[in-house]
Length: 69
Length: 461
Image 1 (cartoon, helix red, strand yellow):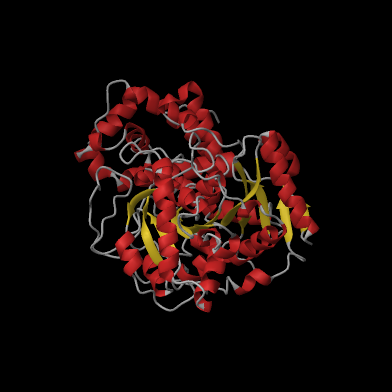
Image 2 (image 1 turned 90 degrees about the horizontal axis):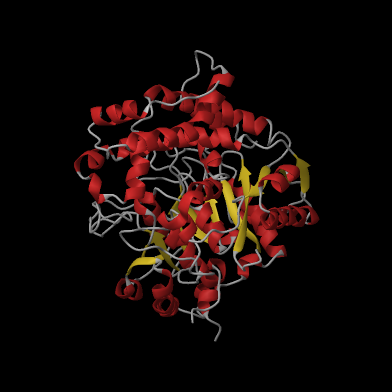
């Protein structure tokens, strides 16, 4: 999987929709930064193939299961 | 008389109990050092000399021991600036559970410590309050975000300090300043009354001069708190009693070839040297597969950016110009992360924790690795003047930190040597959830056999 993050204009529009003002051209830098930092997350998630039943709260159970005995 | 500020918390508490020194003596000694060092370090935001000198400490394990804390721990009626312009002069209406518990154990507070703006950065830069500096060499980064905590403890201005660790903010300053720092299991210490950054990742932990001192501080603050719904109900073990456990029988996982490949030569040599010391003390070293630090760190970044930006959404809309450019840029990025990506990262958290415990910790009690792949960078290298290499330097600085926060597990950072520029090198021991006692016992055994943690930075000229 090759991650290509959102276009600069899309990011600027996304932030504007949330009421976040950014300087002109800022979207490009944000896009490059996010592409680099998020790509490994998306790639790992794509490789993993999560089960339908997996949910964020499972982390609390994992903490309990992984405790030293 | 020996300068009492050179004592550990354990030693100071012993001298206090024996009546050979008073709390006022210790506070006075710390204040004298703060006066000498503060112009060089900018570690303190506020010094509360009169209150500390007049304080009547409660009876307890820390009775009369002067501490100081990162400026994110609230006290009702007192200012907590959170390293920011936005909260400059803000007065809290509640008191942090961790501070209440330290006070109940008898600890005194000398003042509040410098930090990265809103705890959102790894270096020690702060354009609102001035950069905090590394006591071993003021040109170098002290690490953040608990920069003042690392610097003050290393320079013997306070016997210990609390910090917070969302993406390395206790362990980085501990490693860069040459002190011991414990990132606690997510939920082990109540976050009530501590400035929030990312609810899924925030942890509170101690910085002190030794693993033993970290155990004393953790013993005071750990445990369930009904004011923090995410605090764990897991029983609190006897962290101090557990320090006497022998490393014999302890299995420590290490990925030697990976460390040699990924870390700078001086860092790798010092960290693998620490592993050998533990083996000589009776621990068994187990070669293990390294965790997928880059993928785990990327998941952590997704969660951290989304949650931090949501936490700051109101101020980012109403007063964005009151953030520093660096923190504002970090916060802007979080608004471009889709909710599906954020939630998918959170869904991966449980399975990835189980995988780490079933692989890297399959036949071990702890996993040993460097705190950082690189030697300490300068403040200039990690700031706006750092040039095109700056992002890479920051990336390496934090590369071995965030994966631990994503998995929610505890990690102890202790000094394991000095580089050729006389700056500290740190090693991390990462454990299973709620295995702080194991890590502290291993760190204590290591520090009984070595003296890296006893070295103090040279006095300022």
